[in-house]
Image (tube, rainbow, N blue to C red; front, side):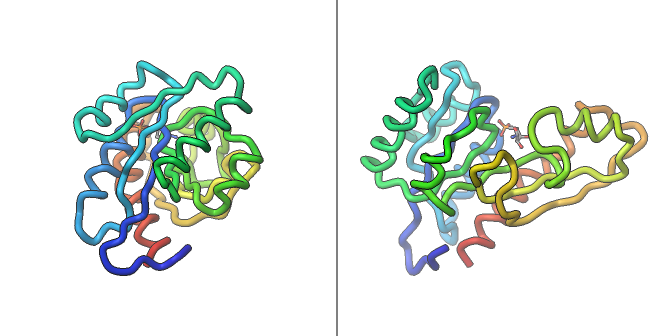
Length: 192
Ligand code: GRF
C-alpha cells in the first residue's frame, strides 16, 4: 500500500449492515491528526442499520443500496466511489458478499474485520462455534478482502482467552472490544 505523506488522507468508505460500533470507532480515529484515512462515505445494505446514525452525527455522506440485483448495485456503488474519489474501503459488519469483479476493481484496497482467529471459523456464528468446540482461545482478524470469503491475506490478529464462564454473547462482547483496537492497528500497519 502506498505510503502517505504530509496531511493527505486517504478517502475511505465504510460498508456496514448493523450496529456500527466499528464504524464509530473508525470515524473517531479518522479525526486524529496522525491518521492516514478520512471517512467520506458510509454504505449500507440495510436501511434501518443502527450504525447509519453516525453518518448524521458526524456529517458523513451515506447511501443505502438494497442489493437485490448485485451486479447492478455494485455498478452503482462503483460510480459513487469514483465520484467521491474513494480509494480505500473498510468493511465493518457488512453482511453482503462482494463479487469477484468488484473486488478486482479495488484490488488490495478493501479490508475487513472478522470476529475469529482466521482461518478458523470463516463465515457466521463464530462465537457460537468457538464455545461449542470448547476453544481455549478466540479473537479477531483484520484481513484483505479477496474473492474467497474471509480468506484474504491476514493483516493482524488479536487472540484472547475464552473463560469457562463465557457464552457466545459474553465472548462476542469481549472480542468486539478488541476489534475496535485491532481495526485501528491494522490501518496503521498498512500505511506505516
Ligand atoms: C463485528 O463483530 C464484526 O467483526 C462482524 O460484525 C460485527 C459488527 O459489529 N463482522 P459493529 O456493527 O461494528 O458493531
